[in-house]
Length: 131
Image 1: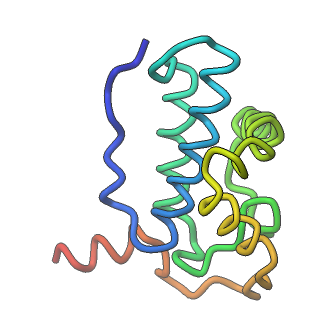
Image 2: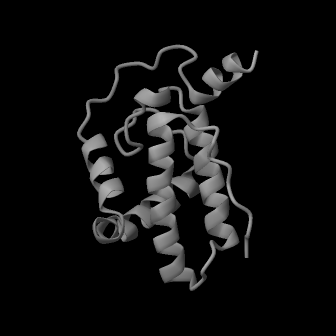
Image 3: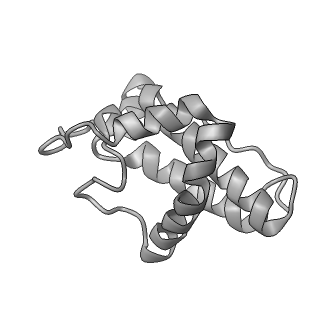
């Protein structure tokens, strides 16, 4: 089992909220399917991958929900795992994490920006602040 915490301090604003939502969904899924208190290695790996993709998303804080995004950055294996986790955990989120669930539903109604601005990713912003 994986006991390490993932450092989310690299994410800014809405990206951090999106990560918290995904983390809550993965915890629900892992607990119910893998029977563990802490995240199993497979689920921890998925969350780490998602954190990396959120950090590098070309839309940055203007990022649409992944389901609506025209840029599909997840590898096929992770995209399918995400779909399975969200389909299972989504309905349970309304009871366990209602604020995160509602925020995610509202975010899914926002229009998708036409084209990401150059260097808008969270990663680019972080690197420019560290210079």
